[in-house]
Picture 1: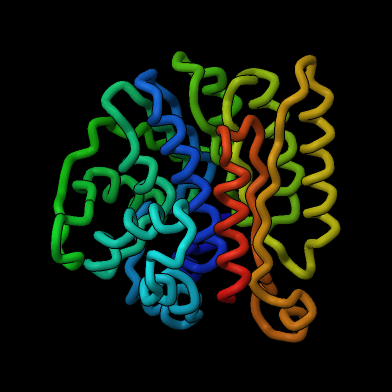
Picture 2: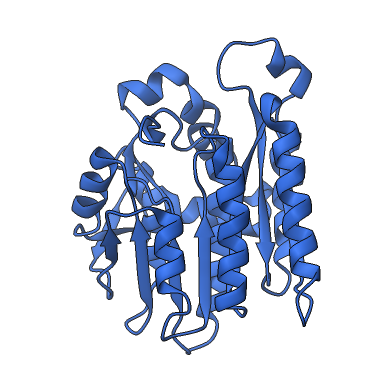
Length: 293
């Protein structure tokens, strides 16, 4: 939906869950030397300023990534600590790294990255940010950062993300990840996501498919129907697909229903063909997030 601006929400609890899971999947893919392909249907700008007045207005980053940075890393589960270490170099410069940036940080020379974005402003920012050096925490003082070039040039498309997945699947390198994470402001996204997963699974059945979804008071029925249909379709394959549902509710749904705003009380990730031990890694992350909410 072209009215949606992630600048209001970057670094919130939903981003933390999504990006921790994304990084864990990418780490798993990088364990083997074989190249892999990453496709993302709704990429966004890639980087966000933490002092953006829109983000300051909502206070979502304050409750999310900014709060996380004040906590002792030794008390965190390993997957969340790994994610926090990746974000530190960006945080030191007042930035937040979104999913395209995390993907760029993990790519190797023979890997491939395909990004789709329709919003004109987000597309322009994404194209600009994808040309910038990557930031990594330097040794010693955590405030210092190092820069390096990304070894792969991202294929950035001004396109409908669902159409891009249909057009590009299966890719030449059939090891990899498909990330599907629309805003869900449009109710039709629930149907589009279901159709996209079915399309990818039918054309590229070895792909890891990661679907992010919000937990919204007003969309409980749509969310339940989406997850049920994805699980059913995965089981119906000639070789049934393993799936994992990772879900964190960081607020009370009843309390959020009484407040103004998006009524976002949590979020989840639905994964097809999950890497080994991803569920266990993310279960610890969910427990930590819900305990400190």
